[in-house]
Amino acid sequence: MAQLPGAGAAGGCGFAALCLGARIVSGADYFLDLLGFQQRLPDVEVVITGEGCLDRQTLQGKLPAVVAQRAAPTPVIAVAGRTEIDSSSGIFTDIFTVAERTAADTRHDPVLTAELLYHIGVDIGVHLTCRAVKRRAVLATRQ
Image 1 (cartoon, rainbow, N blue to C red):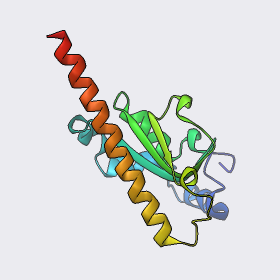
Image 2 (cartoon, one colour):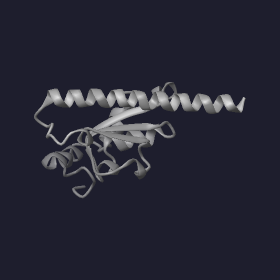
Image 3 (cartoon, one colour):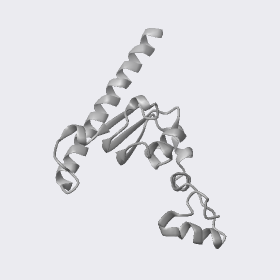
């Protein structure tokens, strides 16, 4: 039992929970199910998710990757403080990062972080509007 994934979590609390009859589940899947994620998907055109740092660990089952996998084929935009992966990874349609907008360390500056996230939100809105206009133009030429 001690070798099961998650058994070593939180200093062995996962193992203790297993001994008491608990079962280990993906935290990402648990919370997405709790929120009714799949039931809400038919009503959306795009999903936006985020994380402090998008990296290899993200792709191994952290929430943003699970969101993207479960949302497919709905486009998924990721917002991150910084990233070590790019949209060519195939999991996210686009990635917007705080780090590409400033050389400053924003970890201890919530005002700057909020301002940068606001501008990322504006950019995402422009991006989605442009995409919608292009889609309408293509549909109009087909009629």
